[in-house]
Length: 396
Image (cartoon, rainbow, N blue to C red; front, side, top):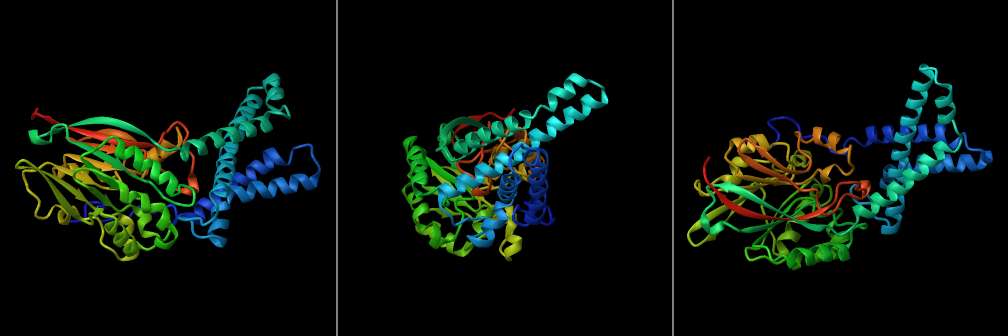
């Protein structure tokens, strides 16, 4: 039984939707050119250069994918990724600000408010809005590439054996090791993770962007993760975009137990806790095994509480119906930006960030430690390393 997609085709990824995203980015870029760049009182040649720069920022994903790597893994220097990411977010925010100002201008004209019309047509207003957008974008990129802080939560599980009361699970997700988030950044994440001395480390997908050869040095620090019961990982969608088999071999060679529709059982003084993991629906595109909870739980102790690792949160209701006690997910990056999180939520079954009670099951969706270089901003949605302490709860 493949519960992760309910028999439907997997949700399209950003890479499948590249033509649509490029079209949207082009339209927004041209809108910025029309409403901001072209009215500037500067020589026509300067406006032309600035217009080309705005459009290039909007389409930088396609440009980079054509000449330097892929959408998933731009193989260009990290500082250049920062510049492109800042410009891209600035264009998007500028377009939204201009749309808001033009909406207010239209309203003022319809309501025949000449003073408001005059104020909204001041020549400095739109350049000022773009300058603010650029500053906010730079702040968002700085937050996006910052080393995450540890967030601590407690989760009560009905039927959790007393031997596991106080058991500490550290969740890492969406590390996205890349030319932007390099081995030095990964090493700092590992150091902060080890500092809290968890009983178990789980990694819920999207560890890396790029090939094994390109990311060997960047991913190496993950081999230094320490926990009493080891490191258990699952795949996210990004593991499939390069060399899936190669990454599975590499992760296991680093001491990780990678669950591909399988489970591990943690034992404490005669008590058992099951940790199960499923693959990602993008596997369909690569003729690899789709998520299969039945296979993941086959042979597991039926009396043991189940912690399920699923990169995407969208199938939480189906997993709760199967008796899963706690689901740990990522994938959403918390929505990246306050406001945009509502769009990300709609694409992920209504889940985007934090703790949810789902039909008697607890779902926790981490904001993630890192993010994809193609959208490297966080505004109001901080990254995180999550330390989860399990607590026994009585049946209500």
